[in-house]
Every structure is written in structure tokens, then in C-alpha cells.
Amino acid sequence: MPLVPQLTEKLQRHPKRVVFSEGADPRSLQAARQWVTRRMGAPILLGDRAEIKAAAVRLDINLQGMRLIDPTRSEELERFAARLLEIRRDKGMTLEEARLAVRDANTFATLMLEAAQADALVAGATVSASGALRPLFQIIPRLDQVQTVSSLMILDFDEKKVGSGGSIFLADCGVIPDPTAEQLCDIAISTAMIARHLTNETPRVAMLSYATHSPSNQPTLVKVRQATALARAKAAAAKLEMEIDGEIQVDAALDPLTAETKKVSGPVAGRANVLVFPDLNSGNIAFKLVQLLAGANAFGQILTGLSKPAAEISRGSSAHDVFGAAAVVGCQAIDRRLLYGTPLRE
Image 1 (spheres, rainbow, N blue to C red):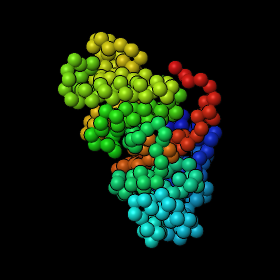
Image 2: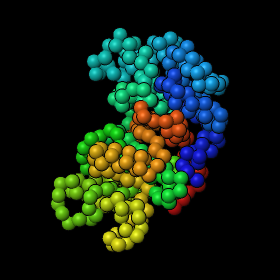
Image 3: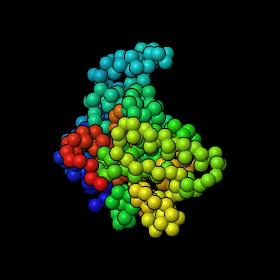
């Protein structure tokens, strides 16, 4: 079964509140309607209430079961401004600047997430990536285990048997242009943790490069090699169940026959479900190429390394993409003990 239907079933058992910061956008409205129809929880739509209602009429979408909030008229404005000032005072923010900032839907949505008034957040449908990401980076704390905030994309194939039942987690595809070995280590750990949470499988992490276990000391190979060693050590120290191999080529990571031909062995060889790219160029190009040419479903960007679940979607996303991203971050908000309650499935 593809990933999103599996996540839908989990959310039907454990409903969550997802805030869509661009509530009048047709794709957000359509995704929110699916959320209600499938009984996955309560969607929260931000924006001018009249605009949201007018858009819903044009699309023939029933708003019942959805919560509409206009950030510019909310009773939470002063409280959120005070909280933002508390968080950003050491950066020189004034109260007036905080009051102005919280009227922005992305900032307001992030403060809702921080205050546990929403369980997960979806933003980016109509704004640049920086506009959606900035409030998240400024307001939401990082996870204890990582120092780096990055992102992942999920490629989901209906029939192709790769990764975890046809799902592959790719990182970083949207945040850090040229990560250091230490940052690649964090990217690997945080991506693997999300993959495990969503699939209940042992993450099999491939630290990708243009060569496999090469004797060369070319700098980009050395970086991936160092990142692999750091990630293994960090996972072992934190007692995180995951397998990590690198540097390794993508064909040896995904195809068992190629791995055997290239004499690559181990639990990751030919069976990787997490792909960590050496830089943003390769990661972003790879997922878009596969999405367009192979017809894979793509969900993300899912932010990793943050203590709250959030997605920064592309302005080119479809309603299906938005719904899928919402399902991912919604499931991230479900306590793992409620999701499985059993030992990790190998």
C-alpha cells in the first residue's frame, strides 16, 4: 500500500489539528476538505474569512468541520506578540515589530504550533520558501539530538518495489546548499528518525556520492566518508536503531543486483530507504527529475531537526501534494507508542 493511505488510516485513529497558513488557496482548501471528509482531524485555515469563504464557494467546498482564523483580527494577537518578543528580544526585536510580525499568517501559524494550538503546520503554497521557513527557524526549537535544520522529500511509488514498500526518503532537498560533514550527519539522523516513525521499519541510510567505497581522497568523497562515520557514532551513542553506509552510489544503494555486481554488501546495499545527498544541487535535481520522469508522488519539503512537525510545500504543488504533506506532518505529531506499541519491525 502506498504511504499516504497508510498515514491516513493512522490519523483516522489519532486525529490531529493541521494549520494551513494560506487558507484561501484552492489547494489548501481542497486538502482541508479531504482532511475533514476522511475524519483525520480538524484543519485550521488562516486568512481573511471573507476571502476563504468566497474561494470555497467558487470551488463548491463545504467549510463545515474547518476552523477559520483571520490573524489580523485574532484575540491572540497581543499574547502572540508578547511571546514572539520573548523569543526574539535578544535579536533586537521591539514590541511594535512583534505586533506587526504576528499579523503575518506564516508567523501566526508558527506561533500556534509553538503554543500547541495546532499539532502540525503546512505553509508555502503561495509564498517563497524563505517566507515560509523564516518564522519556523526563528520560533520553533531544534530537537535535542541535532544542531541542523534541513528538509526531506518523500517519493512514493504505487508499484515500484524500492525503499519501504515503494517509499524513499530523500534529504536534504531544500535548505542547506553545501552541508559540512557534521551537517550531513545531522541530516542523516533526523531524516532516518522520521522514516522510522512513519514506516516502523529500520532506517537503511545511504550516504550518496559519485563513487562507492573509493580509495580516493577527493574532498567531496572525504566529506561523505566523514559524515558516514559521524552518523554511525551518533546513532550508536543515542541508541538509535538504523543502518548507515557510505560513501555509496545511488544504484548500489537501491538495486540489489547492482550492489552485488559492485561487491557492496550489508543491510543498506540495494535496500536503502533513506538517501542523503552530498549537497542541495544533487538532492533537489534528483527528486524533481524522478518526480517528473518516473511519475512518482512527491511529498514535502518536510522540515527535519525541528521539535514540531512542519512542511514547506512548493508553489507548484497540487492539492494531492498538499494533502500528502499534511498527512506526513500530522502523523509526525502522533506519539510513536500510540502508532505501534510493538517492537520495531525489521
